[in-house]
Length: 158
Image (cartoon, rainbow, N blue to C red; front, side):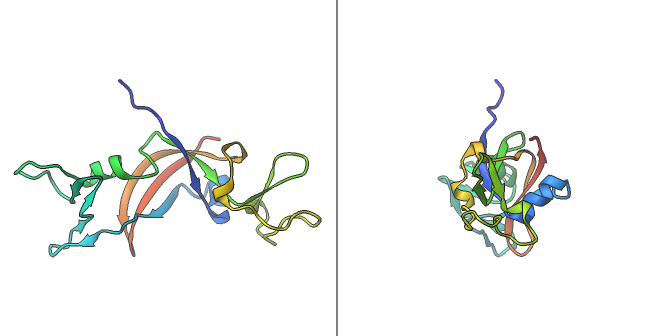
């Protein structure tokens, strides 16, 4: 039995949208919440998540319901697994003739053309049909730079 492809929204900044559209961006990073604590051995630990004890390492020889980092990504990454799709939510303003103006298209002045409502609508209010970019996840990793973050490698499919 094949897996079911999920589709959900992801909020992106105007800079991220421009990079996705021109092909210069293939990865999106999002901070993992909650952040893990570092154990005495220097390993990340999320304590419990979804009723399972999380640790970065092999399954316990004593049994129990421990999961590895790979399983953590598959089960707990809120953005999905490779093959899932994300539709981009970004600041926009409905245009009078239908369609939308997008903040990413106006980088030089960051506002809507004169004569129209000057406030960009927040990305969280964007309906699916107003999204102009659909992404497919090609890889999902958990990386540590300054803080733990999901590193989502994507390709634009629309």
